[in-house]
Length: 183
Image (cartoon, rainbow, N blue to C red; front, top):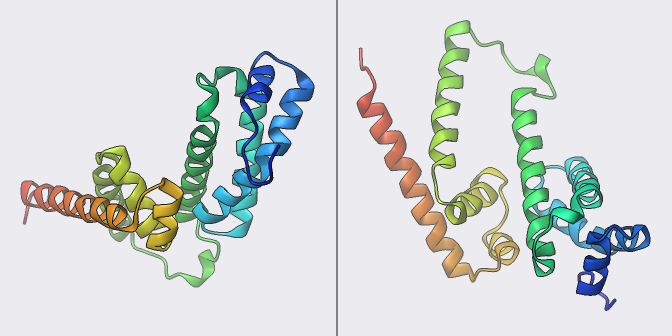
């Protein structure tokens, strides 16, 4: 296998058929790419390592479900992205330094959760291409160039999708607040 290349189609097909040596070679050959994805997508190095390990476990267990052998990289990217997002959501729910943040009143906590749910719903309603750009750029804080590279876009295309995503979320939140009760 060439340096920097994903494992080849023959290896993937053999792994899909259940050949243990091929599965092992596929996992080890994919490891550097998966780690690189995780490092660019996850908030912390620890989350990146955990997400990469989880993605490789899923690869090992579910390689037989991969439909197109050429889709390995995009499949792994989605697994890593989803795992990084899951870990980010968990960290938002459980602050590491709970003693350092002032306690919210029950009313403030309910309002905060409602706002977070509204934002999450607005982001979830975006088309996948816009949602991915928005999460990577605005939530994970990746640079525009990193987001564009990870998604295979030019920087101007990434910026255009990000602008459309932000505008759609803004419109959604605006219409939700106008439709709500204002006492």
